Length: 327
Image 1 (spheres, rainbow, N blue to C red):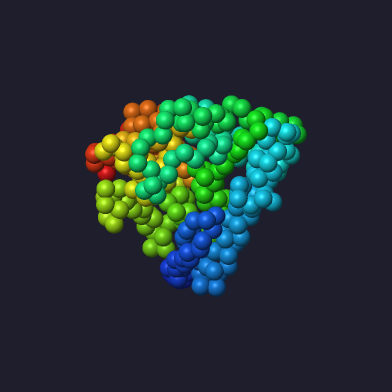
Image 2 (cartoon, rainbow, N blue to C red):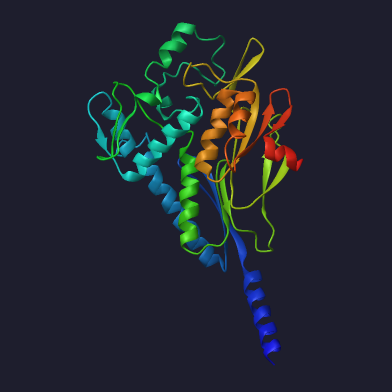
């Protein structure tokens, strides 16, 4: 009798699990497309969870947006060269982590890139390289080492007038991480937060299978060259196929080296797998600037972090662990 009862309970539990479905919504947040996917018991519950994620991402946008004049980030920027600005610990810690990534990448990633003069245009209007003098001048105010953090007072100070911080290369990844963390705390067992290619996943699909992530072919963005199973992992892809300029038969992407003012070249796309989307987001941008060899060397030293690089000529390069998996 006990065995029958246990068997019936197992069937009921199985039925509850199988009753769960995937619910998804697309919203425009932080100026980008966000695809929010959750596993839930009903459409009503799924929509409630997605509403929570949207609210969290909107909260983060108000904190880190440099376009919103009321944000703390704008306050830091507008007081550059004058005095430190007290900010929430959340923003302070994000800047502190950003500076750490800058150190890891030798300055290839830099949140003070927002100080850069916009001398490059990727709308077809530019026909020749800006002068070396113009490029040098464009990055004069850039430099993560100049940012002054006071941990005791929770203040950020940009000592030079005209300096700015911006989170374009890390903000969406951070928002994806925070939305995931919030939903997990509310009991959501599985889902995906996809912020225009900055993606964080957790759990599995209702049928028990891993989430699958498509790696776009940068030489033909309508096609996929690989599908990757992901579990409890963030995945970020950056590509040069959306914004670029061709000068003297050489393609330059919109990702600019904050140290020199020169656009990156030689890489068509970078996909980074990491524990958090914030880190993957920053590293994907950095590898474009660092180049294939230096980028691979960095990734191969970081725990639980891998990458796929597609060179402009079409060659595909994998970091050590992914190479062993023979994708």
